[in-house]
Length: 394
Image: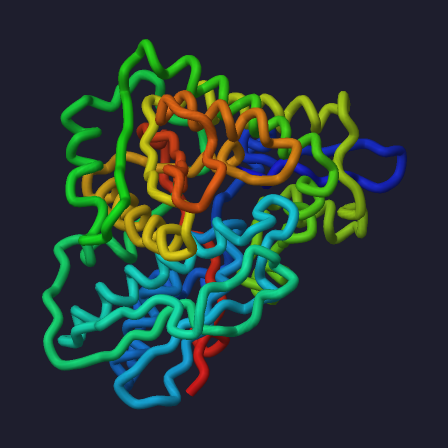
């Protein structure tokens, strides 16, 4: 979901929606980020340690709110220990850390693939010191995974797509349907050999209206719940200086937004007022994302910590496959979120996708990822990434 729409001007309470849709009429949107902020997408460059070269690819992994919560400990030769930065979580929209761990799975899968390119085989052990608890306040830096490395490793054909992968956060081209054969190819071989995970999807015209409506209605819940909206606002980075300083979160870099920021007119202390011009503009944009979905894909499994990580491994493979096929995959994660106000839509998601009630226990089948698919109408930019050194302990 694109959260780049909420910027409130101080003085008079006027609200401006700084989105590509609202700025395109005056030619203000460039879609470009400072080159240094997206340098990770050019590859690892000259790095002597093959583990660091592999990590340079892994940090491009998709992750919620672009928090990039991964830490890699290289202090033991022949080993990589992956932990979580407990400060980089989303207590409002992801109160149990499920989505954060899906992001870890995406990072882990890219790391295993990149190590194989370096001629290294990875023996992956999840949760060697026990799983992280459900309470985010109790999260520590206990390892999510330990990778023991040895010579070998079979290169993965999908690795060729790692630096080309993008997430299209814009309306899809409704004149280009996604063919059933394309959907089948997208789902084929998405999940590595991980027990219990299942992938599915639909481009059936009779199923799309209900799923599109679910996306739109659940998005409104996140937008209209002040604490969940403020979580996004606090992670908004405006203009080159902020983007380069943080290189994470939600980046805005149009000339219009930069000009208003330079005047000191942005107020990011409160969500936009319901009924304002920006409210309508933003709602229209999220409705467009939902309305233009040309199909949907999903990943399900139980809701154990290991399955959450493994769902991320499967998801990034799905995105790499979509890159090879030229079709966009964009998470519409709102209905899968587990904060109280979302409960009716969480229930509806499981009924529509699985034909069963929402899970009550960790062993129950759970929708881990729910994404819209379609064809982007233009180039999709890479998103900023923090410098590799910020992820590594060596």
